[in-house]
Amino acid sequence: MPTIVFASPKGGAGKSTSAVLLATALAGQGASVTIIDADPNKPVSRWARLPGKPANLTVLADVTEETVTDAIDEAAQKTAFVIVDLEGTASMMVGYAMSRADLVVIPSQGSQLDAGEAVKAIRLVRSQERAFRRDIPFAVLFTRTSAAIRPRSLQSIAAEFADNEVPVFETQLHERDAFRAIFAFGGTLADLDPAQVTNIKAATANTLAFAAEVVAVLKGGMKATVDGPRN
Image (tube, rainbow, N blue to C red; front, side, top):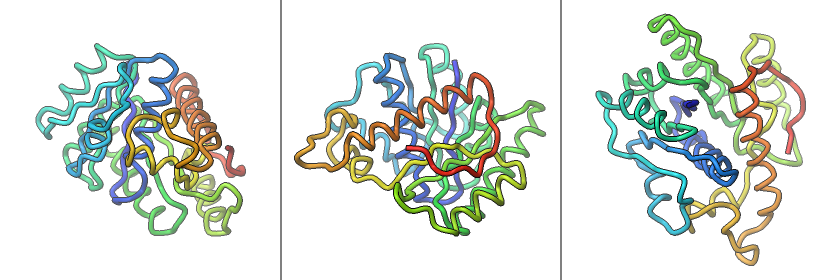
């Protein structure tokens, strides 16, 4: 079953948020999902301890550099999707997890600093391809972007990625109160109270668009794009 790895050498790029959003979207459509929480800060595990985690979503946290590949292989035999949330650094664990990936998602905010860190992640993917003699698909995911405004800096980074044939998701995960809220209250976007959290409908549409694009990429690949953001 497909293994999707979220990786970035930079903390705060949105790895854990993106991983949980994807996992809950897939689980909400009936798929069985395992998230392997390999981030030392354990944000996914903290979310999982709150009420509302889908019954068909499992979170594994006790993984090490020595056990991460076995954990991925075992989870892939049991569930339809395996999602790995990695630590924000380049390490042997990150490399080992990438070696099992059917897709590496590299979250990046729309800044030159984040773009530089995304390039480091891409280089690590390339080194693992050489080490394991297999292609490892990857794509950059822009996170915490504005739904209304596309800054010139973001346009410039996206164009630079396209010029260098770096695949970029068309869907961007926007800055949403609802995305933060699930880590505060637990559960999924569908569980949030509209009286407490704004724009849940837009956040849900954004998440479903991302999940649909991930599935499409797993089925048929993708091309880099400099088009405007979707959803």
